[in-house]
Amino acid sequence: MFYEMRTYTIKVGKVHEYQNHFEKVGLPIISKYTTLVGWWYTDIGELNQIVHIWKYDSLDQRAENRKALYQDVDWLEKFVPVAFPMLEKQESKLMYAANFSPIK
Image (cartoon, rainbow, N blue to C red; front, side, top):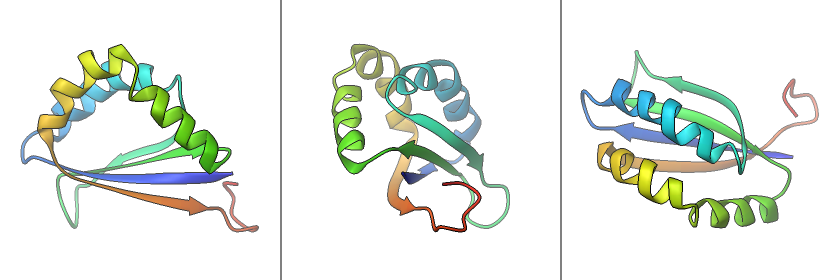
């Protein structure tokens, strides 16, 4: 089991708009391909960031599911055109849980 932590820097003033669009449009689509572990936005420190963590069984599963997502017509036509213009930067980290981690 491993987790992907994605950190998105959102354009100033667009965090809540992005979050609402993701909740209503993006989450139902992407949930067909992966499991959301957690979703946060910043209020102190580096602002205008959203951090979300997704769960995968393997790197192969991630690759297959991401490929399927990128071919999903709803993702491409309903989510991407609205969401991507609000992004400034994207970062992705693949993380493995330690044996003693409460989340495995």
